[in-house]
Picture 1 (cartoon, one colour):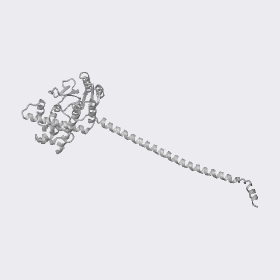
Picture 2: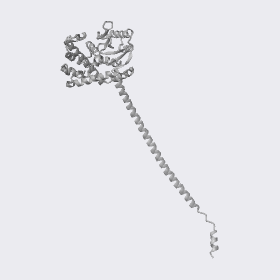
Picture 3: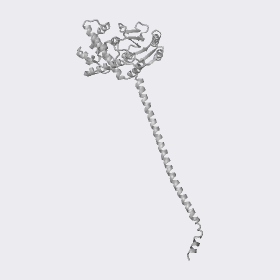
Picture 4: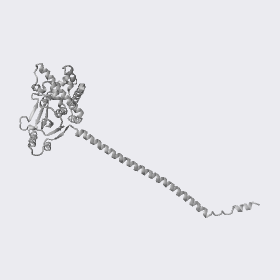
Amino acid sequence: MTGPRSSLRAREPERPRSPAAGSDQVHLWTLVTNQALHVAWRIARGSVTLAVSFLAATLCYFRRLHLHLGYRLKWWIGYLQRKFKRNLSVEAEVDLLSYCAREWKGETPRAKLMRKAYEELLWRHHIKCVRQVKRDNYSALRSVLFQIFSQGLSLPSWMKEKDIIKLPEKLLFSQGCNWIQQYSFGPEKYTGSNVFGKLRKCVELLKTQWTEFSGIKDFHKRGSMCNVLFSDAILEYRLYEAVKFIMLYQVTEVYEQMKAGNAVPGLFGLLFSRETSADPLSFMMNHLNSVGDTCGLEQIDMFILAYALEVKIKVFRLFKFNSRDFTVCYPEESRREWPEMALLTENDHHYDIPVF
């Protein structure tokens, strides 16, 4: 019978496993774990290395970018300083006696004379500061126009009554002054048939700027705008040429009145009595065309400038200290309502602006 044998076999105890098989299994798991850890470490090390490399490259890039931006910023700061500081044609106010001490050192007779003249300006005329003006042949025009704009003065009465933008065409077509085509714009010797277009643009700019400044009531805002305008050489040049043309127009108008037998201011009689300025054409060719190029304004030109702009120009001529010509006014017969512009000069060629 198979029943009892089968039950006996079923009750037989299990045989113990071989020790060698167990150690192989542990070794296998250890090997797998080590390999897994090794692979994980390689992956982690590669990721860390990649991350560190990326971070280093990023830091290097931003460092180079920072250096480049710093260089560009430094360049732009220098450029703006050169543009708005070095090219500023009317400098900021400086103490009068400090300026004198800087400019006139030594014990030469001229240096002693200038120091005494500057002391006279301080103690007798109460001038405390000075604005140094660019030393070129537009110096007188620049000094006067800067004060007109910075003070916010209104247009002269005759400019309000006439459209000054049309004055170039008026001289040509109404008064037959075809010689106006020989007008020279400072260093530009000749502009030919384009002279009317250029003159019109210059006069239009003068009227626009003058009107704008006269409408600004805030003193500090006018000062800031003056600093911007008088650091732009191209705009300045156009303004001065416009003023020169306004002077020529006034000379032409007075000349026509004088030919008609009308009374004219005495200074124009002196102007037309000279061989080199006997009429508007000779005045333009022999005097006005050179202004801004090879010479500045002469004393007689200062009279015409003041008359044309309806201002009184008072000039302190320092080299004439201790003489009756130390202070002169252009024109002497100006009207009371004309505002006064003050200038100082050491040589009748270059002018600075005194500040009371």
